Length: 196
Image (tube, rainbow, N blue to C red; front, side, top):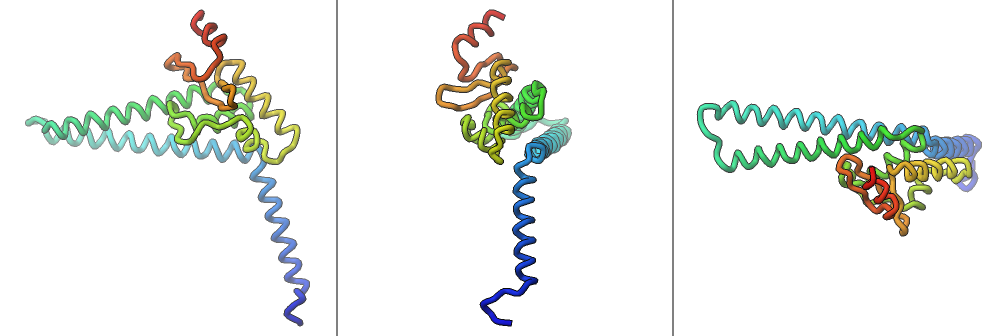
């Protein structure tokens, strides 16, 4: 066997590897897989937050029970207060996130909301707000017209229901319904909310 010419087994392995990569890419581009991935990530974040909150509550109770006879130092009281404030903020963000996700009526709407909430600070998001085209590219990665239209419909359906807003520059944000705060919505929509 010469070094320059691959044998049939090597060619078979290369073809099989290429096929496996194509199938994996196709599976990862499937909307159901993308939604499942985002849902699992959201659920994991929620579970981590719940565990952290319970641990904080136990620690605070332990510190307070240890000092039941005496007073806590000012530093300890300040630290406990700060921890409570942070926990309440995390819980409020989680509740806001869940309230927005509860509005989704289709799989595509849920996928859009999960992506937008990743950039929504008041709902615990830590990324930048997505742009319309970037969101479309991410959720319709296969480039099929059917997938793109489903994402378009989801975005505009949510915008019409005042769940999302799309700025003139293409930034998509969620509307914080819990605080009656509207983010980057046109004045017409703001007037409608004020009238309610």
